[in-house]
Amino acid sequence: MIDFHCHLDLYPDPKRVIDECVRRGIHVLSVTTTPSAWRGTAKLTQTCPRIQTALGLHPQIVQERKIELQLFESLIDNVRYIGEIGLDGGPESKKHHPDQLRVFRKILDMCGKAGGRVMSLHSRRAANDVLLELKKFPDAGTPVLHWFSGSKAELKMASDFGCWFSVGPGMLRSAKGKELIKSMPRSRLLTESDGPFVEIRGAAVFPWAVEETVSFLGEVWKCPVSEVNEQLANNLRIIGKLANSGDAPNPSP
Image (cartoon, rainbow, N blue to C red; front, side, top):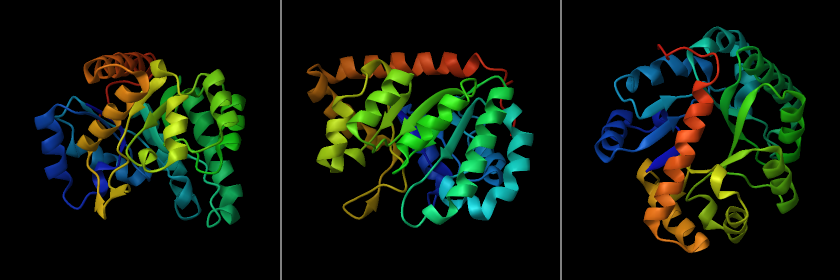
């Protein structure tokens, strides 16, 4: 199983979730929302080779945490994965768009100067803006659009640009989400939970909730779950090679 976008540090009992991920053999990209959370989160899983910790600065809180950009820059050489970063076009975030844009551009520039990184990207109601910025920073690395919710036209633009996508149970709760998944390139697709932010029947999902998405992909691709898992595992190997092709050394929290 693969959970390519999960906020492990934000569960009430992260250690219990991590131990269960290890027991089940789940590959996890543990994203962070602030640079100051990276070291502590990375230490939680430093003995878990299947769990990688990404360095992030979430667009919904940049107005409060933009001061941490300097810390972000000091840590980027320690990581291969960046996330969660991006832009948010929701009504509550629009007034902070200038801060979001400045921070996003600075991070993309840092990634490029560091040799490129695999980036887990937030693009809620801002898919077109995110794509425009990615095109301005072609050396930033490999973009993985998490929980993509843009239009079909924006999805095609992202696919043509070479973006990857991570999809999860949150997207399966709407007809639009399902339709978008059906149009995503299977060779650039990974599963995610986005736990604990995603809730089903009032309870936060855990990384192993990606099984539901795997089953859905089997229906969409008209193939057995075993073939879906084989495709996803191959995709993970490719993204891992892309991450390791950058200039980042072995992570050291």
